[in-house]
Image (cartoon, rainbow, N blue to C red; front, top):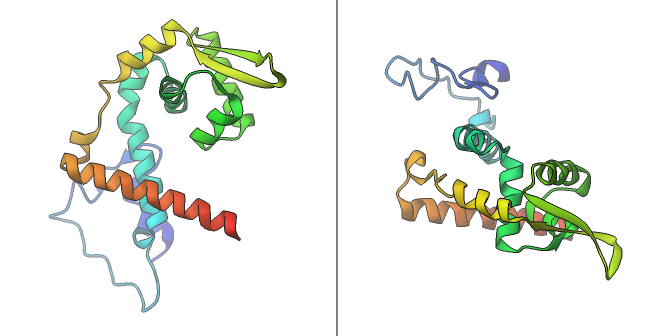
Amino acid sequence: MSVSERVAPMSLKNGPRADSRDDSMTNQKPKPKPAEGDRRLDDFLCFAIYSANLAYGRAYKPGLDELGLTYPQWIAIVALWEQDDQTVRELGDKMFLESNTLTPILKKLEAMGYLRRQRDPADERQVRVSLTDAGRRLREKGMHMNLVKSSGLKPDEFARLQKSVVRLRDNLIKAMEEE
């Protein structure tokens, strides 16, 4: 069976199709067992996390559309609410984004009136970012977006999983830095 055949039930662009596992568990043909030592796409933790990330994006989309934001814009608002008036580099580190990816996001949020970008008077090379009052209100409007219930996990399971994923991420970053 080819990789494209194994991935067919999930359309990453449009979400689960009608013939996906969730919709047809009772009439789905059993998958052939892979040859000894072969791993199917579903066996890769990295794919499970990647596809869960895409599912999160789709699940957040209706709420973000109400706010007129993309997911990266929303995360920037949340990160600035946690620690306002930080440099673009500090914010990029927190969001795991390079400045060339983050800057267009910040420019758009600034044009929307949600944040200010200004040169740091102490170091003109640095750009500092801070929320406006509208940006702080926007974050409060979006706090209703909570996907614990949608995840199908109990709140304690959800919290444990989130902590495990953070630990996994941090361990992977550390391992790459040590190489």
